[in-house]
Length: 310
Ligand SMILES: [Zn+2]
Image 1 (tube, helix red, strand yellow):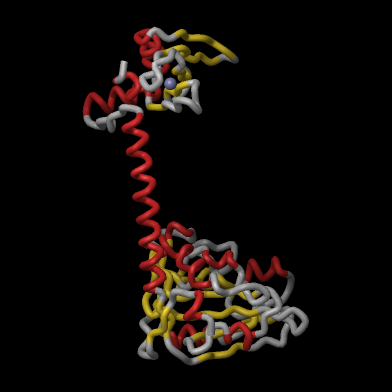
Image 2 (cartoon, rainbow, N blue to C red):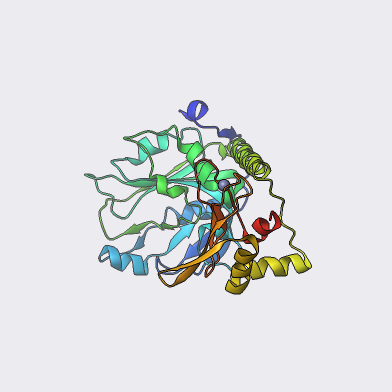
């Protein structure tokens, strides 16, 4: 059991599993969710019930239902951004994984595993499902998934694509491969709250570092945070979208307006950062003012902010 070493998850002693948010889809082509709240016993039973799904892979994509251990935002269709919470960890073992070996990676934990559609003795494939002690927010799920599975290395490593919180899985189906089977492993509940806390901490540190970098850049350029009220906003809008206003700024600061390939550019405007006449912008466009000396200076600002320096 490698959980203690590589994975930040911990076990919660067996107790009543909370109801699980599960979303079903009629087929792979259907993004319209059908939301359910199931007991773990109900979901477990569903994941051990095989449906018929004969025909080609494409036939199955049009006919076989899928499930996803998530709650979506009300009124949303299937997408990563729509996932509010994830209620179970799902692992697809697509490379030579026997059910027993895959489950052994999660020994001691409450889980269900089932062979997937194309499973065969020559190419064993299975899916392991672990209900969570507490649901995890969809916004951090990809990072939580990556951390919770980083200790699993080939040849027995699950498909990393499953980190997508909106990922949906075919229900157990026969019609290809076989013989199929499922297995229930009783145990403690997987608790990913410590992993989620570590992810949130890392994301917050990253956000703060980015913010500090931006603040330093603003300071270096002597910029102020633009006001977005009243007249200022109108001026901002005009400088962003109106070619005549963008040209008027060029004339005011003494820049040349040159035409090339059917669009006009303001050139040679004074740079508030390096002092050279090297700032330019598209008159017929919406881009920012930028200093030509990208490496030695790097000044760039909206025309509104640029205009305030002149
Ligand atoms: Zn410059």
